Length: 263
Length: 351
Image (cartoon, one colour):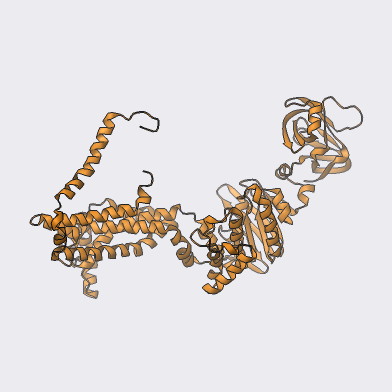
């Protein structure tokens, strides 16, 4: 029944149901495909364990970087007016729509040892980003940061800035006002943005494999391992996929208040 | 702590140019219709809106002077602002809200909380110190906001419609408390209000704004005796007519009708007539009063057992009669009547 009490058109219902099937069938397939009996064994193979460990380290590092870089950036975009702001915002949001593999190629062009920045980093500081764990973190940050920035910037824009005015009249400088008033008020958005960017970093594939390569124990994260194992050890691949699915479900539950409240 | 302010701010088509003065301990009420610049004036005093011209000083301390490129940031002015909706920090307890400014002014956490607890006790809010703002009633939230503003010992306190967010029941109690708090506060206070009752109860001086400029300034008692604008007269329910006086008569600007005065006057004047001095007749009154005009009844307003009769005519006046008289005369809206005012009941003063 629609709010007006009329019966919804049958065609619409059928098409909508097919759309639901598009989401549900692959999920059911994955659950059916998984060999539950050997799951613990599949997950404790050396490749799986190493990929799990690396994924956790890299995705959390990328999340940390996103928060550290994203907070000042979101605040600047929300509070400061400067020429070229629209351009900067478009630049920040680009990785959201850019094919990740293109991001990987772009990172490679900028930071490989052959490029000017990359050669400078390597010659002066001995830092090599390509084919290293640091490169994996950088690639994951590249795709995850926009999620954090848009979430937090929206919250900063919609908050009542008179709270900041009150803090100022009470004698608080901009640092105190930010950490004691602004940040606590947008904390739910900061948490949501961090969870979103973490989920994005964890699933990152294209930019990582292009920029950081596929080296076990160094750059081979969960999604890369799943892709690699599909050919000769599909059971382990399915088991690892289940882990990623479980993480996604957990994220959905964690953010239910933001996304599912209208349901 | 004497406040001397000349505030000039332009925003698009709106120009604000206001002079304000308040000596130590004085409460100045800022009255005016919506959009007249009251809130902008407060924001400018607090340093949240920059002056285009003018000067603001407290005692001998210049806090803003665009010509000399002086502009203290809000946190260094010693000016506290209490917003109409109080804006208590929702994530902090009542105690930490009050302690916030003390912490910002360099007190240790322990000392800030000790002083904050004292302020809450003084405002009878001791038992509420651990509560989050959403669990406080309107009156309690207002007192926490006042405690937070006063705890930093400001030289100037700014109140934006301090009683507007309260329901009628708690209003009078909170007004009385606020009166006591302001009496004990040593600095100057500037209070924006819409309500003449609040202004009379709390302020000694008044500044009336209209369209960005001061239309009246002085002791609050002058409002009732010599209102200078239609806005104030309407607020207080008085008849205010403007005209040009010559000897014992005034020609009204709007209709050209003439009214007679008991005392002679010259030039551009305002004439004040209290509604209870306006008599209403169904037929033209015989006898002496020379101030009588035909009129048509526009509307009635009930005020307790009295009725305000709004009329239109050569001299548009509001009269006040008893509900009994209304019934006896059988008056209805749209009816043609006569109104009369004794010359001795009309006071005039220069515009």
